[in-house]
Length: 390
Ligand code: FAD
Image (cartoon, rainbow, N blue to C red; front, top):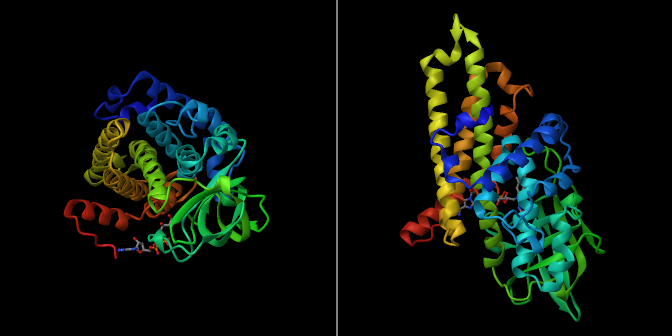
């Protein structure tokens, strides 16, 4: 029997279609065979298992809800969600590899690039032949991307790109980057930049205690020539990058539940096996409180994600609704990981169990794609109409 089926406390699976469950199963089987055996070691060594990009493509993890003719999976938003959940059940870094490729690279190219550029890049991104990255954050512009300094200047048949990006997932191994930069009027523009362009470099950021199986770097542009056809013609301002972030945040709202489920699963089994004072520790009220709270919060998050998915399928999920789900579900997962860590006692800090890795990963997930606090301010703005950011 599938041990995870018992963690679907409210039978949320009944709300899914058969093809959602099938998509999830094929990802689950692949993760079990190819990733689970190596993930702890990759995270310990801080090495991104780049050979997995091809497998991620094969199980349909890149752009599950994008059209097939543009390299996607042709499925709906719930399929996208359950696939992200399955990846993050293994590791948030694994899910990040897929989120960036599908939602932050393929999606903006699909949505904003010319047909010619779509045909040039999307099939190879969908098949994992190309790896992409998304450059928005800068050393001095994180939560406030409007403060970016990276810029483009018109130079006839091309733009000249200058500036630097920071904390960019996949950048050191990327073949191309979707980059956001200000034009001469100060408007944010998006563009596809080939990594082999002269003046382009992507040094790796070392020393992370989180997302250690996912590679992170900078992007440095020193007079990089970007052909004009690579610049998205019609989109101006932060609306462009924010639409991509909505897509990715939606996937994170689902994904984080996967990390929580893995921690809960491990804590429940450990609690039933480990004996102290002559009985399983799961028999003590304090430990039952932890486990009961975990499955309650997981169940609430599953329903939130499912409802968000049905709204997204109708094209009605608002950015503020996505913010609420991202914030709630990631925070929930981090709390579950912290409680699960305690249930495992000393064993909880080792790589014998996935807990500490999930916990450290989730610290990044809490911060990237809009921090925990920023998402609260988005809800605050939405319900009061008053912007408390500036
Ligand atoms: P800051 O914006 O400096 O925030 C610091 C603290 O101040 C936070 O707690 C924040 O909530 C708080 N704060 C900020 N503004 C306000 C306010 N108005 N009111 C109250 N509190 C506020 N970016 C990309 O573009 N592409 C990527 O692929 C990518 N991958 C990443 C991978 C990793 C491993 C990490 C760690 C980050 C990644 N990021 C990426 C960047 C990420 O999105 C930023 O770290 C995030 O947006 C926060 O920006 P910051 O780190 O500059 O923090």
